[in-house]
Length: 318
Image 1 (cartoon, rainbow, N blue to C red):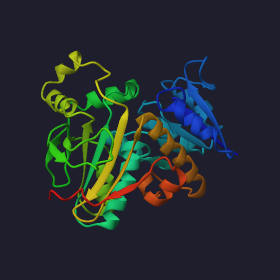
Image 2: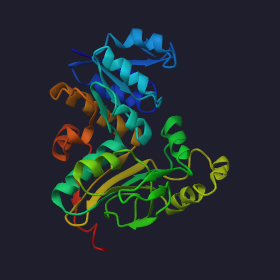
Image 3: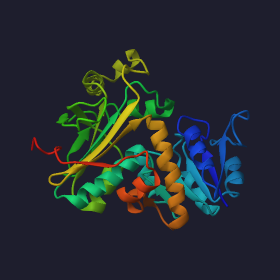
């Protein structure tokens, strides 16, 4: 029996993740957090000593808390556990890549599913790969995710060609599949999702990630805020829109790979649960990206609700 500790186990991702892990007979999962009424294991992640005493009893630690401190990973692997992180923050992933032990990164919807789709698009085609992640403006994906999105306003990241890119700029219009419900052809902006850097290195071609919301108006508003961050003070945390999401990856040639669904929290949880199962069959000893262990075919087989489809019309405007 694999014992799994889910940090933030009663949060936006933690709740559906606990439900997913409960379906696996070989896994015994425990939620962790400060609230005694909701946590199986009470621990304050800001108290290293308390956390150290807890993790030594587990085989896998999944960080779904949104609390990004590399010491969580270091202490987990020092105690003999594998550490799985649900994060999209590039600087934090750089720290995780330096940990001496089994750390699995790029686990979730984006990065995670998007990374697997990008690797498959590269296998089937040639040239640079564009990733488009569309997130429903109507879903409040937890306070940590909201803070993450707004936290990138005005910040920059390196492009594969060496330029410094400002988050939520570089607007580009992408055609979307006709049956990607809720998402029509529309604008998307560059965003610093961590996997695009690892994919550029691993695939040997430039990989760029673009973000859009499910309405063009909301996407344009996000682009405006990067030049005037103070606007976020007058923008409601829950925007108008749906809870639908879409993920697509395309190379210069070949078909695009895409998946659509509802509730990014549930999708992230399903992929995180899959990651825990992958670790049971493919033990790692060093920091590893999810796309190095999983393929579009194996992910589809394990998580049927994530229906991976091919679309040949994505590049018709090129």
